[in-house]
Amino acid sequence: QVQLVESGGGLVQPGGSLRLSCAASGFPLEGYAIGWFRQAPGKQREGVSCISTRDNTYYGDFVKGRFTISRDNAQKMVYLQMNSLKTEDTAVYYCAAVLSGSDHCILAWHYNYWGHGTQVTVSL
Image 1 (cartoon, one colour):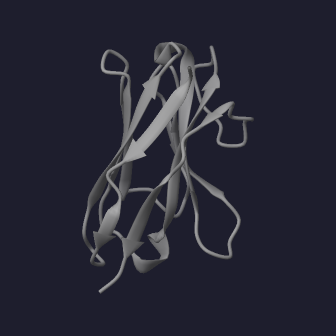
Image 2 (cartoon, rainbow, N blue to C red; image 1 turned 30 degrees about the vertical axis):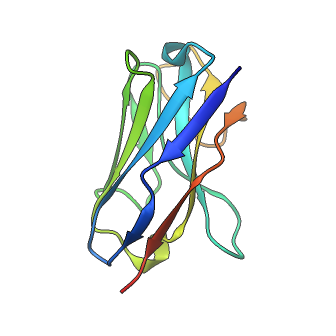
């Protein structure tokens, strides 16, 4: 059974940090690109970052220099380190997987598998 389970969300003050984790099971993570997406109340879902099977990364302009994505295929985990958080980063964050043999990743791909999300709230 394919599963993606996010964790690590919570309440943090502006300027703080959180590390999100995405635990993958039921499929060979090494063959999949992984993306992180987020959806704030009343807004459309947007792509945050992705990492290819070759560890090449892409970031949305609004998180460049603040977020870092990484993966550990042996542990079947993908991480999103979020620093210098802003109130506008408040959203439910989802990880998603897409089968890929490409060196790079694209957030606009049709991602096949999705987790249920973890809430991130940035507030005083």
